[in-house]
Length: 398
Length: 162
Image (cartoon, rainbow over all chains, first blue to last red; front, side, top):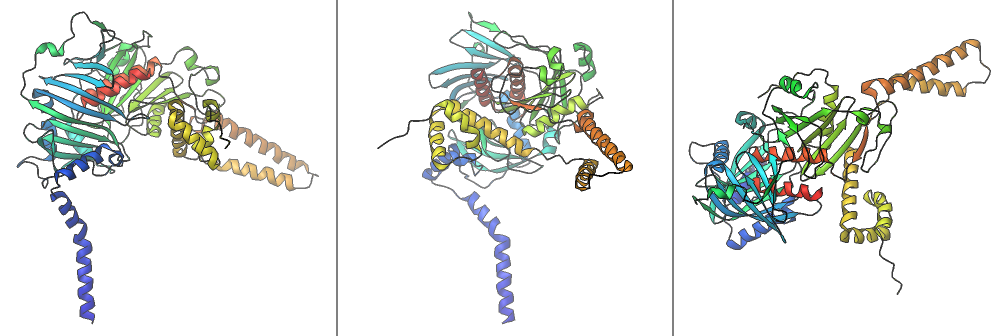
């Protein structure tokens, strides 16, 4: 009797130990029918995808990166392919960053590190050109192009690999091509931050999904058709004649915090608190304005990165009413306003276009922090600028 | 059958805060739900209220300094005592009041004990915030794993907002 009991216990332990992994292997090796793939695709576009389920679509074969390549090798190959490969295609884009999902399709031309997107959303059409230096937002209705300065960023591969884990989770068809699905997850834990569907031949990303910390899809882009190696005329990436260029601001070259302080004439204070894993990527002077003609005081931008995500800290001198106690200010906005006595400060929160921004008016500096972080963390970073009496960078400059 | 008139935006907004925390009756909640489903402006207000609520729930409670409790306890004891006081007792009252003044001064002037700053959830994107968001998104465009097509769409939505 004891022997039978022991055998049953052993069998049960075996089932408990092997069960989930055997089930997972079964799921990944499962080859769904065409109908099943359509259903998966529909689910990925629907609300269930926002719950962070298996939004990656159908898995066709067991995951295995090509021989001698790690998942990170694939990711970096994909980054290089985006600049190297000549592409023509059509993408479907969905963003879940506002009260209503934003949807658009775009014709894409890419060659030699340049890119053009002709968007269409409902009745609206507009274009965006990356000419290798700047971003040009083309508005056909006014025949004007707004120039957005695009700072050159240095990709810090070791930092990205220190902060994130990449793994190949399967392969799936996208735009009639076989792709490898790569999942990128923060080492600190939580759900994946990105899923990429990389073309099996060129490593070009044919589908991407970005997730928030709750594992919900925030943006999704998928090619519905694509041709590689197409010759793209150079004129595709330049502004057509007869258009007006509007340049609301310029960004200076990357430089040290000390050199920036000398340029702008006030002591820049790097934040004393940074989220784990973030380091200073560079500092830039910004002569800003907005496209409606309003001028914005000159500011500096300190850019931090954890290898993949960015955190921007804009600083400028607080002048006039801003530097006075809050009671004397008139802040446009709404919400609960608690009034403290004495020399207190003001905080403004903004959630737009999938990014959160916090403005903190201190006694000497006005700080705007923008990044994909929780509001409480952004506030902590913004407040730590004023607390920092040391103007040296809080982290190494890269 | 008498049918209630649909709620107007101003009526909804005056009760939106209660609605956001589940503080209304079933019928009133249903009316507001129906209105919010069809009114984008009220829906945006509701989303802003929900976000503010989330933010407030994230804040940690500050505990009062230990000496503040001593002072309060002392004042309570003072109240429960007979009104006839000796000379040394009035000395303690003065000391307690001085301590209370010190606590208030410390809370007001020491940086770590300052009251939380005012939080304003911005509705209008002003020029500085717009420029900062655009600058950040233009940098995100160049970041590793950036999806140019979706960043472009987000940049466009930012202009719509302004």
